Length: 161
Image 1 (cartoon, rainbow, N blue to C red):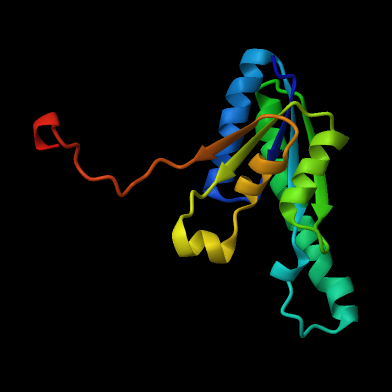
Image 2: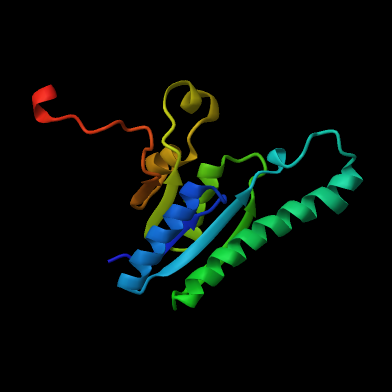
């Protein structure tokens, strides 16, 4: 059975759904959940800030926001009696997927539970998929969690097929 789950969080509904799945599995197995948030500084900067402003104002704000996300998720799990660890990283020039898979090794995790947006076509091509990349390069099993599809029409009967 799995005993250490890595759950990368970005605050999206799919990552929070992955957190719910991890909580359910941890309650059943007694596993420890390692929550990871990777900050991508380029998403928080316009590139026009003076270095002094970035270092004194911008960076501390996104670090605090990342830690707040982790703390909120950790408190939720701890209220259910689940053992939790948190890790906050900055991506730098490395892909988020690479940092996630490295954290698997660093934290001795045996399962990754990761939300995915399930993008297809051009969106996937343009935006990439960290979840897909993690599933490809991780050395442990990866559970991909996706929001239920809302665009599914009414069920077709067997006769209509």
